[in-house]
Length: 293
Image (tube, rainbow, N blue to C red; front, side):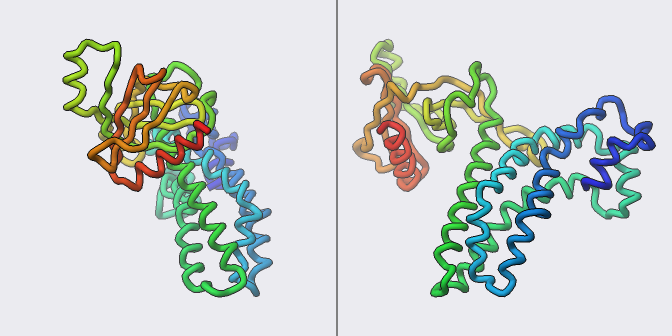
């Protein structure tokens, strides 16, 4: 892909086949695939080869390189932009010519999906290895490597949702790390509100997608898109946010093990939040408590 497509975009002999709108879009189309390639080629593969005789110790190899695996997050975040560009130009003569020269049966988009598939495959491989390495020396490292890879996958997944937030005025990066995201039923109760509003609010929940950052929690409304691949990915229109510095939490709401409360400015605004399961609620409550303390 890097030699047969990316490099060809800079080849003067191919320039006449590239439409003007596609020029200078190499970084959008390929993201940081080159960085991923060099990481594997120069670092990770060599490390892995050191463990040919000791496969059960391979967890250590993952742990040593874990920070580098975050390059996948960057790749996945760029993927929607890459896909939308590909859809615009997929039938371009330039891509057809590159594919013909490479003698590839599949078109470029199948190869651009590889890094996304790769990062999800690692956790499956580690799970399999762990299954057969219960009592051996490297088992703990394998377990830790699996946990770390799952952490990276969660970060990738969360960030894929985060880049779909629309209508937020500020800079999301200033809200600190994205810790959790998920869909909930939400009831609101505003002290200042009209009593009619209060009664109505008790009955009909709103569907909201919450994004918990270190400094704020965002409430968004999910919109399902029609389309294919990443186009089907939902977008989230921003509704409002609460600054974590002024948030309080009530862990138990009577009568429902899935509900908890987030309140704001000394209970001036109260949000009753119902998670899909008690487990999801517990995870969120723990994470919010960590932020608050």
